[in-house]
Length: 146
Image 1: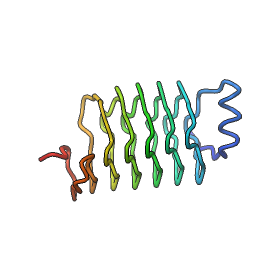
Image 2 (image 1 turned 45 degrees about the horizontal axis):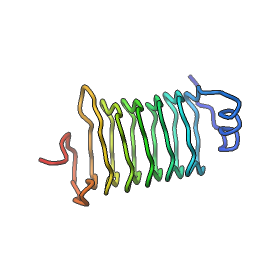
Image 3 (image 1 turned 60 degrees about the horizontal axis):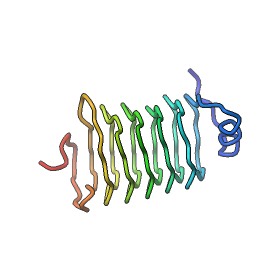
Image 4 (image 1 turned 60 degrees about the vertical axis):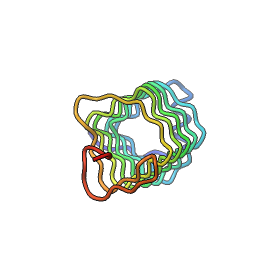
């Protein structure tokens, strides 16, 4: 399926009209900070340089790729993050509640003060990550506390 590049204005217009299928979209250099969004399908979506600080996401199927995105103080609840990839993202003080983290990738991600209650069948993959307690874990690992 081909990727569809959209603007934040187009995204919100479509969401407000009731659209919930945003699979394979590309959103770049956008500000979604503080938005409250629910029940969206975003499989295959790409987000580059998007401000998601303070966003509230509930009942999402993300399975997306996020590069240089800001999730500070975000609240992500009851979402499927299976196979989602986060590169160079900031999750400082974010809350992830009841999220499926099966095969989720975190590369060069800041998780300081992040609260997580997740589940999944296969482990997350971490590379060069700062844990919630501020400790930097270099290299690749499945377990941030080994």
